Amino acid sequence: MKKFLTVLIVLGSLVVISELAKMGNANYETANEINKGIQVESYQISVNSTTPVVLASAKGKRVDLSVLNNSAFDLYIGSATTLSSTNGFLVPSKRHYSPDGLFVGVWYAIMQPTSGSQTIYTLEYIRN
Image (cartoon, rainbow, N blue to C red; front, side, top):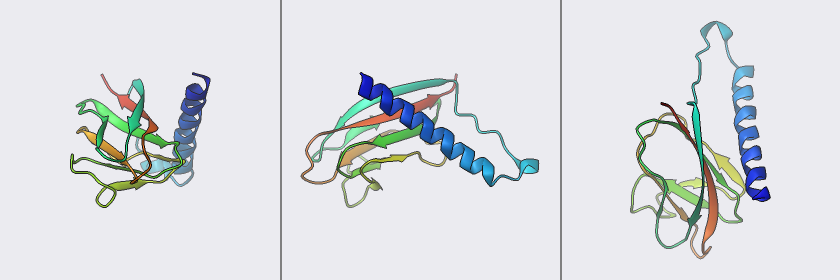
């Protein structure tokens, strides 16, 4: 549990740092508000290297999704059940990824070939 809380704190810090970096380049006269929602849901998902699993289910009110690949292996994500390491979007090992924009459909994930089963962490920002 302590490790999971540490991961959540690190993930939250990455989001804050990312937003601060964006603010450093902002033109404040034309700045837009970024609303991440008012509810955050966190998940631990076991992802294997043979069959795509649901990383995030379809949610019409999801405004953002953050994925932390804290494993030693590469993760591939995408919106198709035929996802593989050749057609998925790469999230390298020990990295965080947050898609740019609103996607409310299902996200699938699969690990790189021969990596076995790994634990991946997600944060979903939900609006009311």
